[in-house]
Image (cartoon, rainbow, N blue to C red; front, side, top):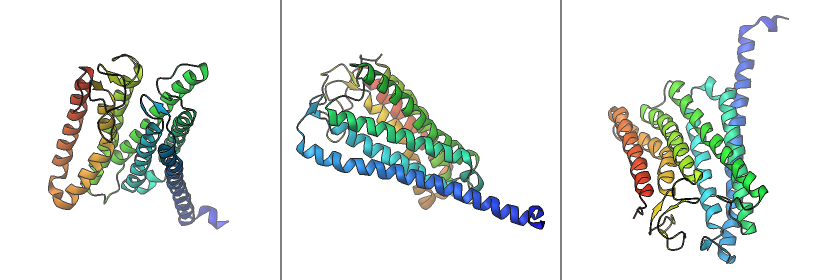
Length: 282
């Protein structure tokens, strides 16, 4: 009976529960990353043997790009979790954010890969009622995915681990927050079809053939994928900058992250304006 009134026993039990919740969040992210890799392997094989084209390039280019991007996003969340203080990190809010991230990332990549296997477009495809609904659902899922990273970023800024290095704390937190906000903005502009019509092109030739090497961005006109790319990868750029500052110039961490955030957002704004004006990135 004394166990029910023993604070140490209750505390130990609570700690075990929190640790179990944290481990579940980590496992979720690892499983989500594994699914991206598992789909990337057959996609890479198909890229070499399937000669079907979409927008004049292989139908497998898009799923491979998304598999790499989503893998990176989930890995970023996983690697930044330890920056959050233990109780918050093991709480249900962080676990829920990780669950939403994994479910939405998995659903999105499964649909994109399925459409590639069918030789059909996943984005801007309203040709059939099913595809129109799927595209709308995918848009909602993408928004929830980004909001989950935003929630993790807010947790880092408001509930950091006491001994977390300042550069990583500020870079990780603001990287996820600013990257998420900028991603939502550019994704909405890209997905609305209000700029240059449906698709990522603004002016120029509406084809992905002859695009910028590795990225595929249009070289004949504007491409809304450019600012979207830079917006999304603020989530990795600022944490990396924070790590470098912690190692090389810890006293300049706060100023360095502030400058890095300003430059990152300036690049997004500049490339967005460039795309809207119908000018290629390079």
